[in-house]
Image (cartoon, rainbow over all chains, first blue to last red; front, side, top):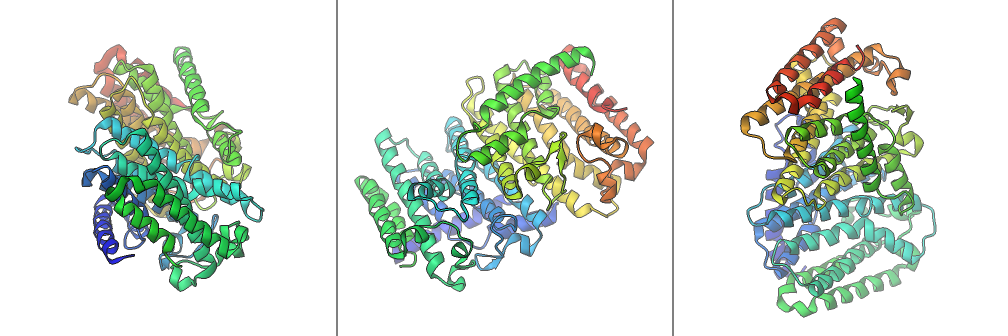
Amino acid sequence: MTPSLQNWASGVQRAVEDELAARLPAAGTAPVRLHEAMRYAVLGGGKRVRPLLAFAAGELAAAPQAAVLQAACAVELIHAYSLVHDDLPLMDDDSLRRGKPTVHVEYDEATALLVGDALQSLAFEVLAAPQAQLDAARQAGMLHLLARAAGSHGMAGGQAIDLVSVGQALNPAELEFMHILKTGALIRAAVRLGAWCGSALDAEDEQRLDHYAKCVGLAFQVVDDVLDAEASTATLGKTAGKDANERKPTYVSLLGLPAAKELAQELRRDALAAVAPFGDRAKHLMELADYITHRSF
Amino acid sequence: MTPSLQNWASGVQRAVEDELAARLPAAGTAPVRLHEAMRYAVLGGGKRVRPLLAFAAGELAAAPQAAVLQAACAVELIHAYSLVHDDLPLMDDDSLRRGKPTVHVEYDEATALLVGDALQSLAFEVLAAPQAQLDAARQAGMLHLLARAAGSHGMAGGQAIDLVSVGQALNPAELEFMHILKTGALIRAAVRLGAWCGSALDAEDEQRLDHYAKCVGLAFQVVDDVLDAEASTATLGKTAGKDANERKPTYVSLLGLPAAKELAQELRRDALAAVAPFGDRAKHLMELADYITHRSF
């Protein structure tokens, strides 16, 4: 990150962390173990990429901060629940996440299942909470969008395709379809929800923004695949090299490392071009596209 | 069920089944296996007790049918997701549900996890769908209520208490707290959401209805414990006698069979008394309280 982006991002990350801490059930309230584990799963880690995108998109639409914060936290809670469930032994069986033991390792599998379930509910509870700066019809629309992005036509659907594709040879179109759902749907939702908190964009602008979000969402996954192939476990904060070990199709296994890196840069250029007409209002969206595609290389 | 209640209930059950079939993703759409499994989990079984309660409460408030149907299906989807997750080996490890193999037996554990996750998202998607007969502020409030009922202060929280209470001696207050969350929260939500679809009740009437819902929710669980202790697996459609086998605290283990039955009848009388002032508008609520407490004995 450039110093100026870092500075802005730190402010957003702090606000999101504080809001999540306030919205999560207090650790001492019954059921204590579940509430502790929910806080363990969500707080004190993560780059908060989706909230950053929501805030950057909110700036484009001059959205009030309180409304964007609410939407950003809802998206982050969906993301956090998905990590807890993905890490379970019956799914990816991962024991390390953000440099800490995963929830089912630190607690137990049944608790991890319930943590994920309850975090998903909490995401909708947070987004449905009364919000003076959003009209209710807009709010209902945002809830609908988030539910759809999380469900079988979005993130959970992408996970299901990932599941049946282990050991299979996917072509680039199939791999892209999987990632557009698995990672892309929630990243798109973050961008769209951030913008919906502000003044309505016209159809063309909405489409530009959505194209940006699609490119960034896909680039994020391509970079993830590159990082998984290149980085060590220590740098990554999660188990590295897992994808290849488990014969999961990735952009690296499909295209090779150099072409995967080139694809990430191509998606970056597309993303930047999509929001260039917004000029300075898209400053942080553009800087985030740079950051996401340059995370490691 | 009395023939007249049976007649009314059949109509509701048919409407709910049709609506659920229409709202669930079509079986042929990608990801196919996930969508098939979601339909398997939800359709063609279940007494639809929560939708029946939502419709009965809707009658009390002269609610439009389309709005109640939407709310009833959302609640049923939350219920269906919870069954899929509860049946997983890492939780209750049940292989039979509604007389059929459970989802993880018919498909696999990872698919069952995603089915539950995606059904929860779908519940909120259904409830957030544009609805001409509800104003948006009311709809946002209903989404908030359902999210809270499903989460760690409701159903998922009750499940977490159930988890840590295996092999422990709970006192009646602790057992009641668990069930008020585990089964009660969603049953209360069904009743309140049904009523919220119609003309607003005053505070006193709202409280009467909520007291009815609490009594019926608890009675439902007491009867479940009695059935589990008495019935055979064939009658029950799920594995009988499991609770005692697993040293789970139940009303039967705590109070003995006769006192548990008496408690169910007491709760029935309380529920009926709570809605008696509504007269004929509460006809089906009263008949459902009778049905729920007389299911077997």
